[in-house]
Image (cartoon, rainbow, N blue to C red; front, side, top):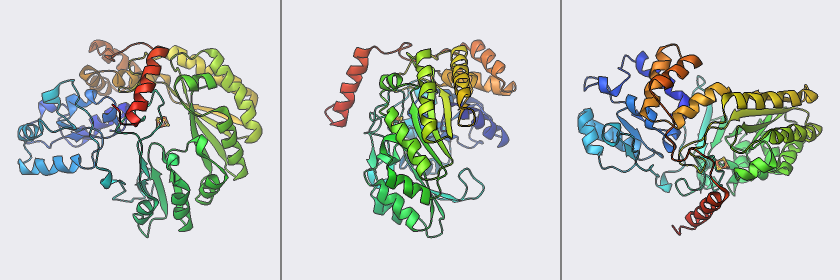
Length: 420
Ligand code: SF4
């Protein structure tokens, strides 16, 4: 499971497989249902009604261990749950209830994770995926993969990344939360494109781009240069501790133009705690500077959703009306740059559903089941969350104070130095 809104897909998968959706309705005649993935770094509790076992965090070792153990106990659920009861990194809803144990961290020797199957019939078709780094050393306060998660960033040596690419792979995707923070990223990308392969990188950081790297990306088939700014203004980026500055975004647009990219795409968030219309107006004004450098700017804009295990955990959703008003304000402002700048927002309504799941417990999972069964409309979700009394259960339903943010920053620094 990657993120909250995929839970409806899990319900579909189980139904299509003829497996009862709720764990309590299954017995030893049914297959075990084992979940894992990025969602487990934040809040896997809404998954609990549907699954038998959840592998938390990095599953490189644990996933194989759980499957081996399941075979050893004859694929019986109660025996497997008993065998896993004290195993760190495993969440057993029938034992732990809403108390999720700590996530697992795999041995560095197992990195990088790589594609096992390359298929034309998948997302990123025919692309061989390999990690170049895992985790992130930065501290954006809204991000689940920030430096306090599993020891920050771990890098893979360029030789190990390149040696793992099969001879027949024509497209290579370099995966990680902060791939361009890899100190030897240029050597890795050059190794890929020198082999006449296309390259893709899951996360370009605007402050790490330069002529050499963007030139290599253009050789590797890049036509859209995508970076994230997240905060709408310099002030908002400071508030969420995002280190991207206007000057980095300007340089990104200039590099994109110089290397013949069709589009500069910039990810943004709206509805971030503390944001005002002034921040939105600054974004519009700044767009005027960007389009002078590259007249094809595209904003991918997502409403902010607070996630567990982040400093902003428990902060409220801005409100569907507030988010829609801010998006409308951006749209109106960008009208001055028609044909040069565009806004591609994700839905404020579905962001609210994501928020209810991100901050909810098992009741939120059951509400999702009710809503999905009732047709999956937004109205069905609203009704189901109310009927199940599925309220946000975050630890702090408010914006942290400046003093708290400073204390968290200090703790992060100590964690980085292994002093905590
Ligand atoms: S740079 Fe990206 S991955 Fe790293 S903490 Fe910030 S948002 Fe998360």
